[in-house]
Image (cartoon, rainbow, N blue to C red; front, side, top):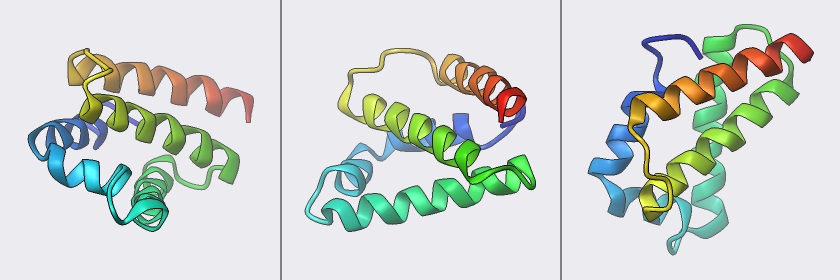
Length: 98
C-alpha cells in the first residue's frame, strides 16, 4: 500500500455508502458477499504489492476489511488518512518479515 493508494478512497466510499457496506459485510448476503468483497480487496492489494506472498495479502486484507467494518459500524473513529497511514506502516512491517 503506497501513498496515494486505494485505502483512503475506499474508506471514504464506505463512509459515504454505509448501507451498501453493511450489506457487504453483515447483511443478507452474509458470508458470500463478504468473501467476494475480500477477494476484490486481495486483488487490489496483490496489484499494489506486486509478487508478494499469499500470507502478506491475507494479513493486510483482513486488517483493511476490519478497518472498513469498524468505520461502517462507527467503532473506528479516526480520519481516513490516519487509518491509511497505519495500514501502510503495517504493510511495510509485514513485507520486511515475510
